[in-house]
Amino acid sequence: MQDDAKTQAENSLNRDRLIDSRSGFQSAVREAFAALVAAACHEVVICDTDFADWPLGEISVIDSLTQWVRPSRKLTVYAQNFDDLQRRHPRWVTWRKHFAHAVECRVVEPLEQGRMPSLFTARGGLTLRMFDSARYRGSLSASAADAVLAREQIDAISQRSAEGFPATTLGL
Image 1: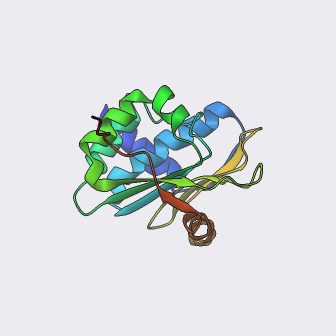
Image 2: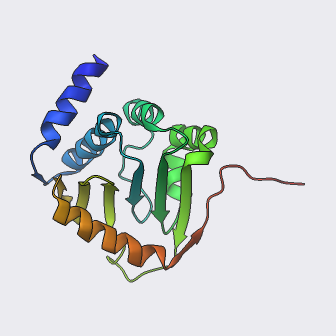
Protein backbone atom coordinates (compact mmCIF):
# COMPACT_ATOMS: atom_id res chain seq x y z
CA MET A 1 0.00 0.00 0.00
CA GLN A 2 2.80 2.40 0.88
CA ASP A 3 4.60 1.63 -2.40
CA ASP A 4 1.38 2.44 -4.28
CA ALA A 5 1.14 5.81 -2.55
CA LYS A 6 4.79 6.56 -3.34
CA THR A 7 4.34 5.61 -7.00
CA GLN A 8 1.20 7.73 -7.23
CA ALA A 9 3.04 10.69 -5.67
CA GLU A 10 5.95 10.33 -8.11
CA ASN A 11 3.61 10.15 -11.12
CA SER A 12 1.56 13.17 -10.05
CA LEU A 13 4.71 15.23 -9.48
CA ASN A 14 6.00 14.58 -12.98
CA ARG A 15 3.60 17.22 -14.23
CA ASP A 16 2.97 20.73 -12.93
CA ARG A 17 -0.45 21.51 -11.60
CA LEU A 18 -2.45 24.30 -10.07
CA ILE A 19 -3.96 24.20 -6.59
CA ASP A 20 -7.35 25.79 -6.02
CA SER A 21 -8.66 24.47 -2.69
CA ARG A 22 -7.63 23.74 0.87
CA SER A 23 -7.93 19.99 0.30
CA GLY A 24 -5.89 20.33 -2.90
CA PHE A 25 -3.17 22.15 -0.98
CA GLN A 26 -3.09 19.55 1.78
CA SER A 27 -2.99 16.75 -0.79
CA ALA A 28 -0.09 18.47 -2.55
CA VAL A 29 1.80 18.75 0.76
CA ARG A 30 1.33 15.03 1.39
CA GLU A 31 2.50 14.21 -2.15
CA ALA A 32 5.53 16.48 -1.87
CA PHE A 33 6.67 14.82 1.35
CA ALA A 34 6.02 11.35 -0.12
CA ALA A 35 8.11 12.26 -3.16
CA LEU A 36 11.09 13.12 -0.95
CA VAL A 37 11.67 9.47 -0.20
CA ALA A 38 12.05 8.53 -3.86
CA ALA A 39 13.90 11.70 -4.87
CA ALA A 40 16.51 11.33 -2.11
CA CYS A 41 17.11 15.09 -2.02
CA HIS A 42 19.34 16.30 0.79
CA GLU A 43 17.76 19.62 1.69
CA VAL A 44 14.14 20.66 2.13
CA VAL A 45 12.81 24.04 3.21
CA ILE A 46 9.26 24.75 4.31
CA CYS A 47 7.98 28.20 5.08
CA ASP A 48 4.66 29.54 6.36
CA THR A 49 3.33 32.07 8.81
CA ASP A 50 2.24 29.38 11.30
CA PHE A 51 1.64 26.06 9.41
CA ALA A 52 -1.97 25.97 10.62
CA ASP A 53 -3.27 24.55 7.31
CA TRP A 54 -0.42 22.13 6.64
CA PRO A 55 -1.03 18.42 7.41
CA LEU A 56 2.32 18.09 9.19
CA GLY A 57 0.94 15.97 12.01
CA GLU A 58 -0.64 13.34 9.78
CA ILE A 59 0.79 9.85 9.95
CA SER A 60 1.52 9.74 6.21
CA VAL A 61 3.64 12.92 6.42
CA ILE A 62 5.48 11.70 9.52
CA ASP A 63 6.16 8.34 7.83
CA SER A 64 7.51 10.08 4.73
CA LEU A 65 9.78 12.31 6.82
CA THR A 66 11.03 9.35 8.85
CA GLN A 67 11.94 7.43 5.68
CA TRP A 68 13.60 10.51 4.19
CA VAL A 69 15.66 11.75 7.13
CA ARG A 70 19.29 10.68 7.41
CA PRO A 71 22.30 12.31 9.08
CA SER A 72 23.27 14.07 5.83
CA ARG A 73 19.79 15.51 5.26
CA LYS A 74 18.36 18.77 6.50
CA LEU A 75 14.87 20.17 6.93
CA THR A 76 14.68 23.90 7.59
CA VAL A 77 11.41 25.33 8.86
CA TYR A 78 10.68 29.07 8.73
CA ALA A 79 7.69 30.56 10.55
CA GLN A 80 6.68 33.79 12.20
CA ASN A 81 5.10 31.87 15.03
CA PHE A 82 5.48 28.23 16.12
CA ASP A 83 2.60 28.28 18.65
CA ASP A 84 0.00 26.97 16.19
CA LEU A 85 2.39 24.31 14.94
CA GLN A 86 2.92 23.05 18.50
CA ARG A 87 -0.80 23.05 19.23
CA ARG A 88 -2.09 21.59 15.95
CA HIS A 89 0.69 19.16 15.10
CA PRO A 90 1.88 17.41 18.29
CA ARG A 91 2.88 14.29 16.33
CA TRP A 92 5.27 16.39 14.21
CA VAL A 93 6.68 18.06 17.36
CA THR A 94 7.40 14.62 18.83
CA TRP A 95 8.97 13.46 15.55
CA ARG A 96 11.12 16.58 15.49
CA LYS A 97 12.51 15.81 18.99
CA HIS A 98 13.78 12.44 17.72
CA PHE A 99 15.33 13.96 14.59
CA ALA A 100 16.53 17.31 15.95
CA HIS A 101 19.92 16.68 14.32
CA ALA A 102 18.29 17.11 10.90
CA VAL A 103 15.69 19.82 11.62
CA GLU A 104 16.35 23.52 12.05
CA CYS A 105 13.50 25.81 13.04
CA ARG A 106 13.85 29.54 12.49
CA VAL A 107 11.62 32.40 13.58
CA VAL A 108 11.16 35.15 11.01
CA GLU A 109 10.82 38.78 12.01
CA PRO A 110 7.26 40.05 11.63
CA LEU A 111 6.57 40.96 8.01
CA GLU A 112 3.78 42.97 6.44
CA GLN A 113 0.50 41.10 6.01
CA GLY A 114 0.76 38.71 3.06
CA ARG A 115 4.56 39.04 2.69
CA MET A 116 5.44 35.74 4.36
CA PRO A 117 5.55 33.06 1.67
CA SER A 118 3.86 29.72 2.08
CA LEU A 119 6.06 27.24 0.27
CA PHE A 120 7.83 23.90 0.19
CA THR A 121 11.00 23.55 -1.82
CA ALA A 122 13.40 20.64 -2.16
CA ARG A 123 16.83 20.73 -3.70
CA GLY A 124 16.37 19.13 -7.05
CA GLY A 125 13.47 21.23 -8.25
CA LEU A 126 10.27 20.28 -6.40
CA THR A 127 8.34 23.41 -5.38
CA LEU A 128 4.95 23.84 -3.76
CA ARG A 129 3.93 27.48 -3.57
CA MET A 130 0.80 29.26 -2.38
CA PHE A 131 0.20 32.52 -4.23
CA ASP A 132 -2.99 33.33 -2.31
CA SER A 133 -3.18 31.57 1.06
CA ALA A 134 -6.62 32.99 1.85
CA ARG A 135 -8.16 31.34 -1.24
CA TYR A 136 -5.72 28.40 -1.41
CA ARG A 137 -4.40 29.28 -4.84
CA GLY A 138 -1.01 27.90 -5.69
CA SER A 139 1.02 25.45 -7.72
CA LEU A 140 3.03 22.28 -7.41
CA SER A 141 5.91 22.24 -9.82
CA ALA A 142 9.04 20.34 -10.77
CA SER A 143 10.28 23.32 -12.79
CA ALA A 144 13.82 24.50 -12.15
CA ALA A 145 12.69 28.10 -12.65
CA ASP A 146 10.15 27.77 -9.82
CA ALA A 147 12.84 26.28 -7.59
CA VAL A 148 15.14 29.24 -8.27
CA LEU A 149 12.40 31.74 -7.42
CA ALA A 150 11.59 29.83 -4.22
CA ARG A 151 15.28 29.79 -3.25
CA GLU A 152 15.48 33.56 -3.74
CA GLN A 153 12.47 34.05 -1.47
CA ILE A 154 13.96 31.75 1.15
CA ASP A 155 17.29 33.60 1.00
CA ALA A 156 15.51 36.89 1.69
CA ILE A 157 13.51 35.34 4.55
CA SER A 158 16.56 33.68 6.09
CA GLN A 159 18.26 37.06 6.45
CA ARG A 160 15.37 38.15 8.68
CA SER A 161 15.32 35.03 10.84
CA ALA A 162 16.90 33.64 13.97
CA GLU A 163 16.99 30.20 15.55
CA GLY A 164 13.80 29.44 17.42
CA PHE A 165 11.51 26.69 18.66
CA PRO A 166 14.10 24.45 20.31
CA ALA A 167 13.54 20.69 20.18
CA THR A 168 13.81 20.46 23.95
CA THR A 169 13.50 23.01 26.70
CA LEU A 170 15.53 22.96 29.87
CA GLY A 171 14.07 24.24 33.09
CA LEU A 172 15.10 24.61 36.67
